[in-house]
Image (cartoon, rainbow, N blue to C red):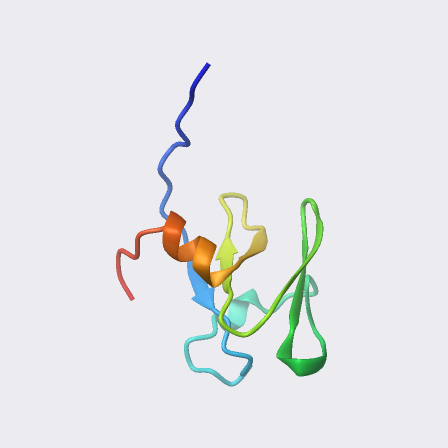
Length: 83
């Protein structure tokens, strides 16, 4: 069997390491986010904790959950519709 994932439009934010970044969606800052040394970010996801670093993308899922995607994977997988 072969399948294709259904297309979905979602929100993303490229993590800059700066919580004062004007592009940071302030309503996304929840208890699920934790910040570590060297500007690393950790997010509690449905599958457990994920870690990322400056340049990674934070993606809001279809159920309002958040997860991290490395920059190179994001650029290979997603098409930006608007900034």
